[in-house]
Structure formats: C-alpha cells, structure tokens
Image (tube, rainbow, N blue to C red; front, side, top):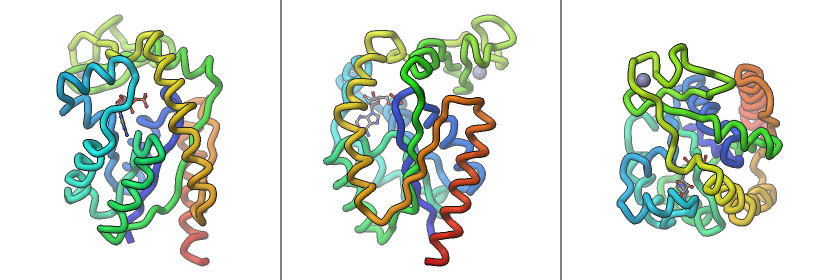
Length: 218
Ligand code: ADP
Ligand code: ZN
C-alpha cells in the first residue's frame, strides 16, 4: 500500500526539511507545492506568492494530479504545502478517491512565532543546487556563498511584510484544516519542531513508525 502523508504547519516550522528527510526514510516522494510553483509559476502567480497570498486551488490540484503519476510516487508521497484551505481538502479527497488512494496520517508541526520569524528571516538558498542555509543556525562556510560556489539568495517571500502575511493566511485559512482531519479516523501526529533538526527528525520518525505499525493491526 502506498504511504501518503500530509505535513502541516506554519511557514518556518520545518515542513520542507522534515518532509525531505521522511521521504528519504520511506523511499517516497516529497511533493512541495511551493517548490512546484517556484519552478512553474506564471508572472501572475509569482506576484501572489510574493505577497504571501494563495494561488488558484485548481491549478495546484492539476499540478499534483500529473506529479503523482511519476514513478517516484510508487511507494507513496508526502504532501508539503497542500492542502492549505478547506476547498483544497475537498479537491484532495476527490483526487485520492479517483486514484483509489488513502491518507496514512497528518503530521502537524508547531513552533512559537518568534522561532518561525527568526527561521524565515535568516533563511538563504542556493539558486544552483537548492541547498538551504540559515545565517545563524546553519551558516555557510564562506559568508554569502554556497559550498558549490554560487551566491546565496533570499526567497522573494521571506521579507518581514510577506512573512506576516503568510502567517496570517496560515492562521485564517489553513489551521481550520486540523479540525477537519481530527474528525476523521486519521492519525494526527503533533510535533513541536522548535528544537534541533536532528532531534525533531528522530521524534517524527518514531511517531510515524508507531502510527504505521498500529494502523497495520487495527
Ligand atoms: P511556506 O509554507 O513556507 O509559506 P511554501 O514554499 O510552501 O512556503 O509556499 C510559498 C507560496 O506558494 C505560498 O505563500 C503560496 O503563495 C503558494 N502556495 C504553495 N502551496 C500552495 C497551495 N496549496 N495553494 C495555494 N498557494 C500555494
Ligand atoms: Zn549551491
């Protein structure tokens, strides 16, 4: 059976980092809608993203519908950044039903707002190899440059105004999804992700493992 997870959490909670690690542990695909959009967005969509506003729901489902046909999704996938509002929950339900797939669990990350703000404002990425750094927590060896030699950049939406907008959109549109999923017989794995990356990763992995084991027996 395919392992399908949703990772849920505010911007800066570490969804990208932990999805990538979990995907590696289970040999499943890491599907980040933010990443898909950064590669494929139209000018109009880029303008929305720069303001921290959500882009069209249907557009994302279509991107996902195509993406999950890829062979790297054969064992399953982890959805990072989707669904993000109530309509997307419905669209995802339809998409999964249509493909006879079902969700295994929702992993819900949380961290205090000051941690989120400092993580996002200090985040830098490499446009060449997509490596991520943080000015304080994970600084590059050479100031301002990736180990591959390229100059590091800041994401267009990691400025303080857009960060505030993204947190607001998360509170208003995305948090209510937890209630929706809680009402289903679906495990929700709450993890505080304010600590060290490796510690948090270990906790997530252990909790996911026990959830998978349990679900095989009930
Ligand atoms: P974060 O979750 O850290 O804010 P992402 O990289 O997941 O960042 O998303 C960046 C931007 O991409 C969002 O602010 C939004 O504009 C757009 N986006 C990503 N996923 C979705 C989605 N499911 N629905 C609508 N817009 C999305
Ligand atoms: Zn690089």
